[in-house]
Length: 141
Image (cartoon, rainbow, N blue to C red):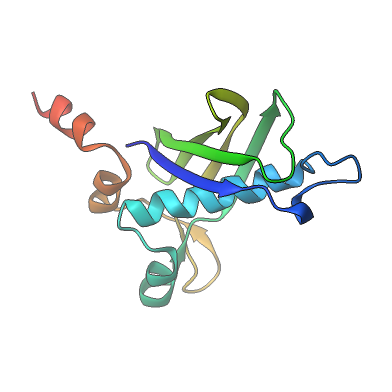
């Protein structure tokens, strides 16, 4: 499943040269991940409130190809690129119009916070929500 997250670059996202300050790409990847989960009907606040489960960040990387500037319209395209027993990798591509300006990924762990934080197996019903319906149909044949 591909999820798109759109936003406009704000003045506070830029540095003195008027270019987006690089940590903002990591902030936007985090926002895009939670948008992906919401579109997959996995609400971060709900699973934490009801089950004390969250998806903390284990690793992140972003490669920058072209700069972004104040008021640029940006679309982040996100997809689960790897799904393991306890962790998943979500890949993000940043677009300004047709141009890919950056790409990156996050690796997150399905984690229980009932006691000491501990990674746990991602439930099968959650796995199905995290991946494409098309993928599910193709794997059933």
